[in-house]
Length: 78
Image (cartoon, rainbow, N blue to C red; front, side, top):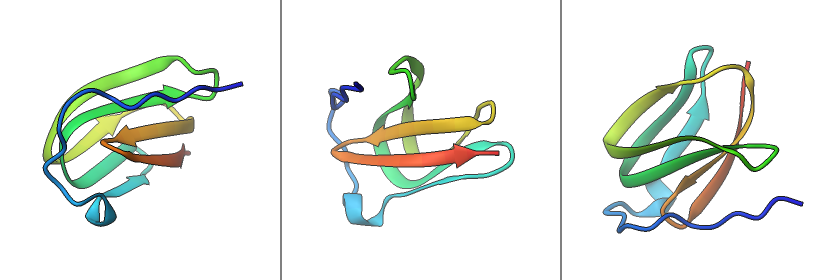
């Protein structure tokens, strides 16, 4: 069972406008300012970072859960 908790911090973006998607190089996040957590399917925290509007997080291939404020997204990096 995977338990997801939301990160501390205040997001300055409307979560409806946040875009989280995978590329061959990793995970891209656009339209968000705040703390981001990337969690694998086992529940391990893989990356934690502060984002200022846009970032590309290099990461190995796999299925990940990305938490941006109160939005939770699943991405598959190939």
